[in-house]
Length: 272
Image (tube, rainbow, N blue to C red; front, top):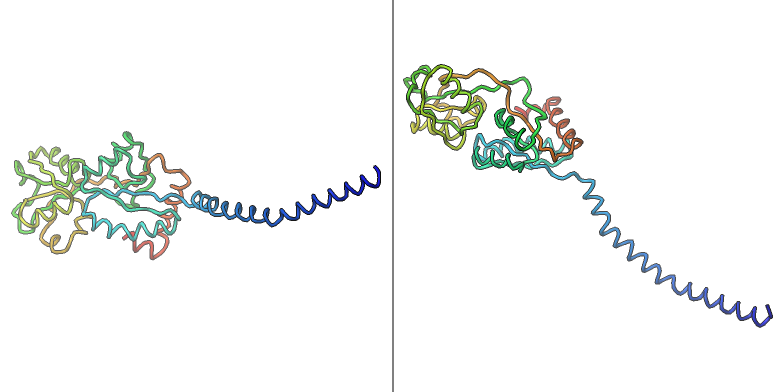
C-alpha cells in the first residue's frame, strides 16, 4: 500500500471512530428507554405471576349475609395472612341460589353441607379437603318455650318450617326422622336458619328445623324464646371443598394455614 493510500485509510478509520463515538449518547438514550420500558412492562408482569390469584370462598347461607360476614370475615382474613392467599368471602341470598352457584362452579372454595357435597362433587367436581375437627352435625326441632308440644309426635299432621329443601341437618335429617317415626307433617320452607328461629319465636310458626350451632348463634332475644324439642342422630359435618381449577399447591397452602389455627390462642379464638 502506498503512503498516500495508508494516509487515506487512516483518515477513514478516524472518521469511523468519530462516528461511533458520536453515536454513544444516542445509544445510551436508546438503551435507557428500552430498559425503562422493560421495567414498566416486565416487572409488573413478573409480580402478577408471583402473586397468587385471590380465591372466592362461598359460605352456605344458613344465616343472613351480614351475620355470616361478621362471623367468617376475621377467620378468612387470618387464613389469608397465614397462607399468603387472599380468600374473598362470598355467599348467596338463600340456599337454592347457593346451590345454583355451586352447580355452575362459581366458587373456588366452598363450605357446604354433606348432601350438597355429594351432589356438587359429581356435578361440578368439588373435592373435600377439610372439615371441622371432632364434631358431628345434628338436626334439631325447635318450638316456642311456652309451647305445649313435648315430643315430635305432637306435630303429627301439622306444619313444620325448614330453611330449604336441601339444608342437610336442618331440613333433610329432621324430615327423615319424622319419616322413620311414621309421623306425617306438612313441610314448609323459608329463607334461612335465622328465618326459622324468628318465625317460631314470634309465633308465626309453631315448630321448625335447625342445627345447634346456628341456634346458639342466633340473637339472645330470639334464642331465649325457644327450646329444643328433639334432636336427630349425628352425622359427618359440613365440608370445605375446592373446585378442580384450584392448583394443588395453592390449596395445600390454604389447608396448612387452616390447620395451624388450632396451634395458638389467636387461631383458637377465631375458630370458636
